[in-house]
Amino acid sequence: MAASVREKQTAALKRMLNFNAPPLKNTTAEPVWKVLIYDRFGQDIISPLLSVKELRDIGITLHLLLHSDRDPIPDVPAIYFVMPTEENIDRICQDLRNQLYESYYLNFISAISRSKLEDIASAALAANAVNLVTKVFDQYLNFITLEDDMFILCNQNKEHISYHAINKPDIMDTDMDGIMDTIVDSLFCFFVTLGAVPIIRCPRGNAAEMVAVKLDKKLRENLRDARNSLFTGDTVGTGQFSFQRPLFVLADRNLDLATPLHHTWTYQALIHDVLDFHLNRVSVEESQGSEASPAGARPKKKNKKSYDLTAADKFWQKHKGSPFPEVAEAVQEELDTYRAQEDEVKRLKSIMGLEGEDDGAISMLSDNTAKLTSAVSSLPELLEKKRLIDLHTNVATAVLDHIKSRKLDVYFEYEEKLMSKSTLDKSLLDIISDPDAGTAEDKMRLFLIYYITSQQPPSEADLEQYKKALVDAGCDLSPLNYIKQWKAFTKMAATPANYGSSGVKPMGLFSRVMNTGSQFVMEGVKNLVLKQHNLPVTRILDNLMEIKSNPETDDYRYFDPKMLRGSESSIPRSKNPFQEAIVFVVGGGNYIEYQNLVDYTKARQGKRVLYGCSELFNAAQFMKQLSQLGQK
Image (cartoon, rainbow, N blue to C red; front, side, top):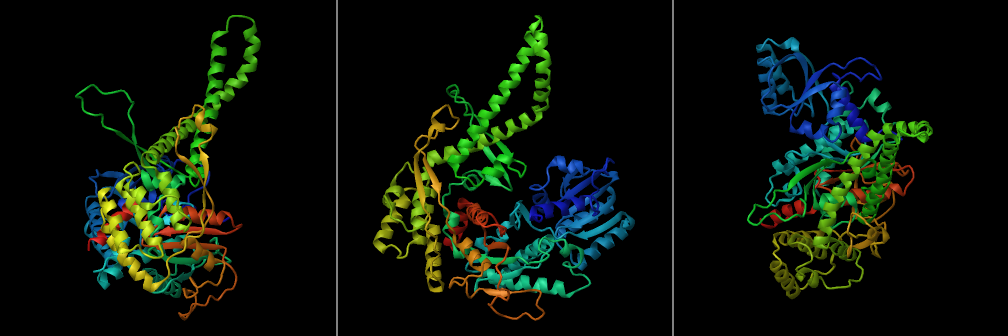
């Protein structure tokens, strides 16, 4: 299987940090020591991919933010990795004037304009530092890879390209153009890094179409300029797509507003929904011990702990898509095996230490030395295992607290029934007016999903009743105002998205694992198991990838940047199904859709699907954007 986008971006970063020369394999030579200067954009790109230890192995002794106060380090080369913005360029020129470093390797995350290059050149001349600026590179790395098969466009300034920014009613054409250019610039970087020119498909008449038109133009111009094309020769031949090009499906968030609000049941999506999970790092408030603080004392401040959930964490890679109850069981099993290994080491210690006096000990020794050496050599591995078990115990416990206190299992099951139009076992009004079930936000999310997925909107009288119950529960109704307009608008434009017949089977309450001395007290939480079903985004991908005819996707536009004339057609030229595809949601995405695509791909041999989105938000962040839109 060819390299994933994560591997490609990591390789590009390592090459850059080695002064843009391919890193040497297995040499024992010391790396050249150097400093790395990045801005916040660069930091966000590097941090999910390279740990501090990996940076040190490549010879990065210091990594500093461009706009921090930095002391001169005269005999060290500096590698810059920044966006080509005005203030960054000014700061680089200032560094040249102050002669901070021995030599400068300037790498721009996205292409730098001619005029800005000239600014740097004239500053270097003035500072008499021309010979110190060793190299200037455009890296085309302006996107953030979070998983082997998932990327987002940016994290800094993401409000500029958010769902709210694209959909606000009073947007000017020039602003919209700017937003589309930002998105296209990042997508262009993505395809340069991938080394592939895609075939683009998109729906008509929304933001996704504007992105497609601009991306097609930008790829086309780059391919035509044969001397400077980024898709020629060495990069493309080695690309994973050398024989077949990938399909690039652009989707618009507006085609499915229910999924981003949906309560979820898989581990990664739950963490993103209820905890603070950001660029693969989760922050958890540590609950202090339950000892009562003396009367009148200030309550203890909760400590925040951050954990990185990385590709190297095998437990995470295996279970991030599992339903939560399975994860709880798996953590418990890991803990038990770890304890057994730990006891073995302790037992050996006691034998070695205590029975040195009598004769029997000698025969014991020879047998145990082997055991002890193996125990000692497995210690670092054990410690790492212990760290990961502790991490997942803490994270899973934090998630469980939310599930129990907010009855998230009830919400999840109810929403699944709404979305798959199955029969409901209790009325919506009951859940909304139950003070124990969830926060005001949970209730609002549930009601919005009901409103979005219902075929007939509720009658005015019913709506008033719901509104009253929501207000009593402390909900802010502004998101509803926006969803109402949106629904009226999409009704004219298209049929509501169909969510497939998903079923959730409750498996009875938690099984034996939970009763016998487990860390997780899961009483009363339903053990729900998921049946595979396709969300709207996955279904659209399936139609286009397998070239199925379907009214939903038949009039999607078709672009092929490699065709000389941009012929306008929606008829795909190749009749063969695609093996590789990238789905990109303009207006933001979430881990629920990502997981749905991963499950879809698992069931199909030899297919690969990447998921990308302009920003990654959880339901709370999305609600905030909806309520801003509803207040306009």
